[in-house]
Image 1 (spheres, protein in one colour):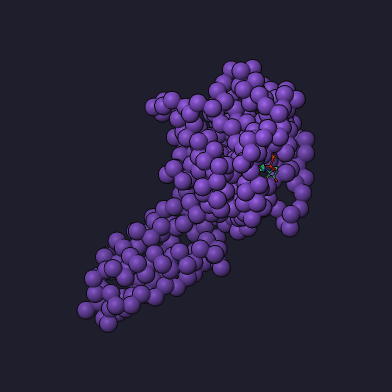
Image 2 (spheres, rainbow, N blue to C red):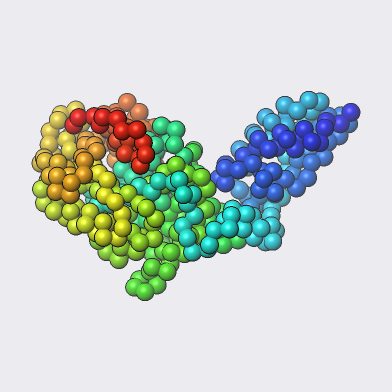
Length: 360
Ligand code: ADP
């Protein structure tokens, strides 16, 4: 007797699209289910793009769940590609009635913007690693690389997969459980981004509103350095964002960082903390770049200093290898410091039960 079709469909409800994070049944991706008297089952799933690199995930999940249905002896999975109409219907469903010009974040998603007064202080590296640390702590996290002219998040996280475009909607690729979006993933061959002047705000608005993030606990945004027009536009486009300001320990850096903090406030963000990076050289305690900048900045803008991160070549090496340092060197001093930062950030989640911060 052939296995029960309803049971197979119920099993397919447990097959989750790795990027869209919803069951394939709910996304109307199941094209065909054929069950033979010999217990063989053939399933066809329609993907958004041909040659989707996540095929193996579907293969594993279908084999596991459909294979567990009683009477099933063999499972075959075939792939098809959605038509334009199907993609449009999927995009409409994912958008869920949201107006096209709004960033697609669920109301409960927290937006943490990582800002700095100038480049080179480790803002992008810390944004990527903070996101990885939040994933480690069980959160559903996205990283938006909004450093549009100097995008580096794809490099730091080793993501090269292009986003899937479903109708006019951009589905961010995943790195493990982390959703990653960068304009760099859309640019051809490392081409520079040419948005300028009046086009800029509209282009950013469209870019943000076209990205489908799904249900996230936290979206970490790598802001452009400084107080230029991209940073200002973003401040206005990101709803209810909290800003973390990254600085290095020397007093001169702190003055520049104050400007970024003031700008974040002026564009409607709430500055919630300071992170001091490159505070000491691991293994030696040596203060390569002076000391006191983080404390002084925190005092000046009246927010807590959430963490001090040591200078550790392991962090740079991991970033250059496209890997969060928490994975590359989980026990390194810098990994512990980044976990402490993530905990401090979590403790400051609006409505979170406040626990005492580690005394620095
Ligand atoms: P920004 O985004 O502020 O321009 P990056 O994140 O690109 O800065 O960092 C600049 C360089 O410094 C990168 O090569 C990065 O790997 C390195 N770096 C950042 N923070 C640290 C640290 N704590 N220890 C060692 N290297 C670091």
